Amino acid sequence: RHHQGYPGLFKSLAREFDHTTCRLISLSTPQEVDQIADITLKEILTNDKPAEVIYKNDQRHKVDIIPSPLSTSLNEAHIQLDQKSVVLVLGGAQGITAELVKHMSQAYPCTYILVGRSADPRNEASAKEFEGMKTKEEIRAYLIKSGKFTSPAEIEKETTKIYKNNQILRTIRDMEALGNTIIYQSLDLCDEEGLSNLISSIYEKYSRLDGVIHGAGLLEDKLFKQKTTSSFGRVFDTKVKPLRVLAEQLRTDCQFVVLFSSIASVYGNKGQTDYAAANSVLDDYANALNKRLQGKVISINWGPWKGAGMVSSTLESEYERRGISMIPLDEGKEIFLNEIKYGTESQVLIMSGNNW
Image (cartoon, rainbow, N blue to C red; front, side, top):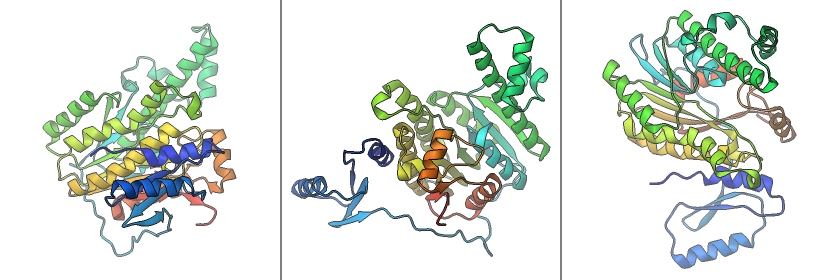
């Protein structure tokens, strides 16, 4: 079965085209051709708001978000990880994923295999020279002073690379200090063969893979009419391609798979048709993968994070305008850990709103 990203795509298009009705009609029960034609005509002539409607047994449904507190009291955690356990983390060496996995590794010290596009910073000759620098400003000033670079573009590129390296190094060192064994693997996650070989080698070496966290993502925000197919593909594939490999390669005894999706696939976002579509595929896949594995599969539609994650200042003010506030990091870390331990749904939206 093909997993499509239409919900996020249409909801994002609806935010970009003010005078056009963009609507996705999902048929969850089989319909005759005439019935489909009737439904389509009715939807064209209906000008209410939802960008997604679902028809089930001839009834028209809208999607509603219902707050539902997670019960953690008196429950035993659904996962059992000990020192011998192995957890694979895609995109887990920097950014918000790193923060959350670091928090998890404090509660569950074991072997964490972190996968990212950057080369292993521990192999970089200059890593020692920059390791103590925490901000881009500090790194930039140092590079300018060194006189090795002539153009501002070169300085900027090198600053970003060193900053990323430092983040990865800090994640590795912090997690090691918490008693974990950390393996860092440099890999472009659009390389399905590379990821497939990595998972095979994990099973070969450890004879187990207890959990997977897919937190990789890429943003190239632009309005749909300005997007190129190659840019759309990069954003979409970074999220979606690893899923196909996981679905094929994971053994059924895997205890948990957590997919980092986004609020963008639930509500849509201007400029993020590709990102929202990719996250909708994650939401759909979670449900299917959940049936195949003995453990749990959760797609988390994260709201925006305060001071971390992938939210630009433009997007932050857009969220503010819509009454969506930012998730505080410490609170979010705890919510994430509890979701892995006690969560039972295959898709959850976690956001810090003004109403709940």
